[in-house]
Image 1 (spheres, rainbow, N blue to C red):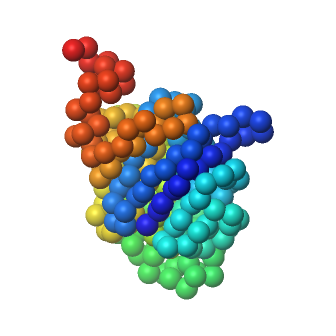
Image 2 (cartoon, rainbow, N blue to C red):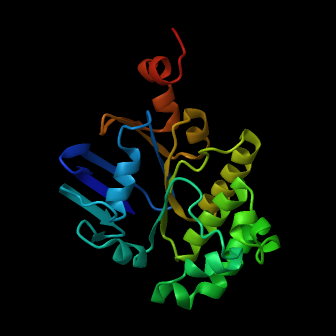
Length: 236
């Protein structure tokens, strides 16, 4: 579904992503793990067209999207859910969801997609007429995910869904992401918490200093002594 070949990206004169190559298979969940500030968010921004790819290529669903504008990438079904609660606070839950179906293709399927969103996130149906500012942190995170679904997503990139949430709310958000994956959606997730990452991951990619230093199944990554000592604090 998604293939990166030697992707390089950054800001101004600073290069952050240092030639990353990886693949995410259709229907799977790939997870980017690693320390904060090492390029995971920058990589998502490059994939989604919010940041220019300096070199390398991004292929999505069989097409080269490296040089496409962000809105054209969204039209193809690659949806980016950034960090935080970036919903429109003075709009209702229903209005936020409707905005997710702004593309011509998504608009045609908006009614069916809305039913799917409310099936996966029943709490949003309960709150559909509330202004988004009145929602809890966990509910706003669910709303951001639901709005991404409304874009007729084939692949959803989710950047640190647990950021700033209480543990009990994180459990609920991760249950809902599991439902998205079980429904057949392909997911690329950024998560610093290795324990949380292994709950969902089909494949994990350890990012350090803008490069992939190790890729593999969760058990393979967590069985690495260096990973356990450096990132999990387990002395051996």
